[in-house]
Every structure is written in structure tokens, then in C-alpha cells.
Amino acid sequence: MSAPRLVRSPADADLAAVLLMNNAAVPNVNALAPHEFKWLVEHAAYFRVCEDAAGLVGFVLCLPSDVDYWSENHRWFLARYDAFLYLDRVVVAEAARGSGVGALLYADLHAFAVGRWPCVTLEVNLAPPNPGSIRFHERQGYARVGARESGESAVAMFVRAV
Image (cartoon, rainbow, N blue to C red; front, side, top):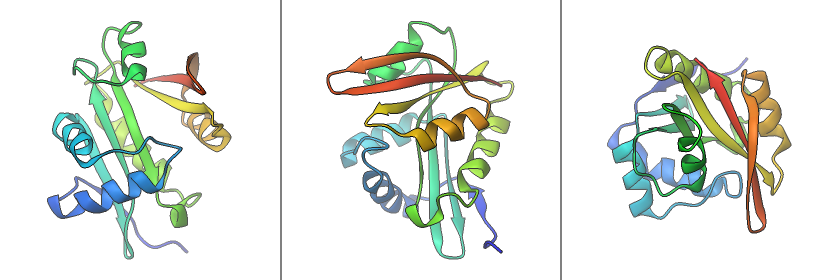
């Protein structure tokens, strides 16, 4: 039986742990310098953490479509969609992967997005490959709508209507 979990807004005291969790998840997400992380937090339309009795076990951070973001992936969606909630990063602590944390975070995210944006967008690494994430997102109702390559990296672009 898994420990009870809570999805909540992050407290200031959580931010250092969230940044560490993010940077420990490379290459599934890109590493962030503290000033980049601060910018993302300040511009997030949706930012939640998941915790259990052991502490933080995951987080998700999304940006609105109308923010001036440096991400080429965000710009890819901006060129193709009028309005969207961009899921910039989601991380589940390694010890909690496969235990339902991601599905819990996504259920909260999708409930939040209804009536605010027509869709949620995101990308998943193709190079380096992340097949587990692709399967997870397909189970969550995301459809692949394209791909973007940059140097040695490539990502699959996904959208889910809300």
C-alpha cells in the first residue's frame, strides 16, 4: 500500500528541493540555473508539487502561451496554436516512479486547465529517447502532433484538448 499523497501549491521552502529534483532528472528535463528556475516560477500559470510522508516526490510546472519564453519548443507550439497551457516540466523522484505520482499530478493539471485553455502542450525526448514518457503521455490522452530536431536532440510534440 502506498503512502497518502497530496498535490499542493509549493511553499517558498520547497523551491530549493524542487530545483534539485529537476536537475537530478537530466536528461529527461533540461538542467536549470537558479535564475532560470526563478524566472519559470515567477511566470508559471500552474505550478504544483506532490508530497507524501517522506517529502516531495514530484512536481509539474506550466507556462501560458502568451509568455515570452526562451524555449524553442514553446515557440514551436506558439507558431501553430492560438492559446495553450505549455507543460514545461514534470519530474517524479526516481524512488516514486511508476507509483501513480505522475497520474495524480496530471489529473490535477487537467482539472485546472479546463475552461482556461483549449489544450495542454508538451514535448518528450526522442534523442535521447524517453519511451516510458511517450507511453505515459499517450495513456494520458496526448496525441503526437509533430517533432522538432535541434543538433543532436529531438523531441516529439504532443497536445491534449481539455
